[in-house]
Amino acid sequence: MIASLLRRDLGLLLPGGRGGGGVLPLLFFLAVAMLYPFAVGPDAQLLARTGGGVIWVAALLAAILPLEKLVSGDLEAGVFDQLHLRGVSEELAMAVRLLAHWLAFAPLLLLATIPAAALLGLGEETVRTVLLGLLAGTPGLAAVGLAVAALTAGLRGGAALAGLMVIPLAVPILIFGAGALARPDPSALFLTGAISLGLVALAPFAAGAAIRAAREG
Amino acid sequence: MNARLAARDLACRRGERLLFCGLSLACEAGDALHVAGANGIGKSSLIRILAGLLRPFSGTVEREGMIGLVDERLALDEALPLGRALAFWESLDDSCDTGRAFDLLQLAQLMDVPVRYLSTGQRKRAALARLLNSGSPVWLLDEPLNGLDRQAQAAFEALVAQHCQGGGIAVVASHQDFALPSPRRIDLAEYVA
Image (cartoon, rainbow over all chains, first blue to last red; front, top):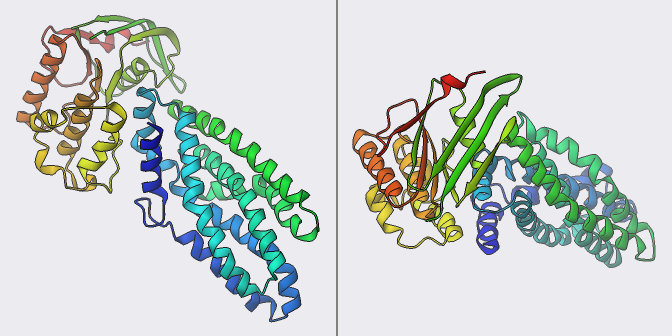
């Protein structure tokens, strides 16, 4: 049953999938990395010092783009109702969707980080820290995104609201993830991972409760 | 087929409005029930309460057997061909012999058509096919005849009769007449608060 759910969710969310727009966040992410040097000038030292943070901000904003269709389409179509009648709890459906959402967005983002780092002229050490940080942080970003997408799914203008709601919730991940760049030891990376795991554990319950609440509305 | 559906003293509130109250019903295996009433009187809400998707304002519902629901929401992926969109639910339901339902509802030639190109009646027939293939003993149908042509209506009424003969339960909410085998009727107008 979980395999069926995951297969459908991946078909919906993967780039080139039915949800559409799977590549858009990636292009957005690369565009930010490309525009930043134009904006601040070709000072290689400045770019190398600030580039890691720019990649983090770009990743956070790119994580907002796929949220619009993450939950609302299926909620309107009654998919969660039909799943509920078949004994699939909203929490399970959301946990599977979280996994599918992360798979559809994080691995490609990590790949795109390498050309983005080249555009910003980052050093090898910095690239490694950014990649490890994103690896630890993207599950948390996906979790926050899913919970917020479920909360705003039934609302008019929900997508814009979701963007605004994700930003403050994602700040802890950003602080520790990007903060790892300024420290020689990996403690900030561990904290990023810890925050991520906490969010991943909470998100299916928050999103499931949001879907049940939307039924009463 | 083990099926039972009983509700006691149901009341339903939507927003500030009490739609109906004091409604009790009991369906044993083989029963068919027609819930009648004007638009907006709470037929859909009653169906959703019986399905367990909406909490009643007061009262209790007891169910035995899997619920099959058909309402105005299709829950099929619009971009997929009908066959593949239905296949997702078939894999969850472990359906076998799906072809019979497709023949009965004349869907076999539509299997390669993306769901978004289907007409209103064809979409309804697709939802009914999923219901048939789910094998659920308790059918909750919210305006199942909407959009169906006369031939499909008759075919579906025959299917409901067959389902009840086999020990299933059917609750049909409809403002239209629905030919049921042993017609029991609940008129929601009698329970308006």
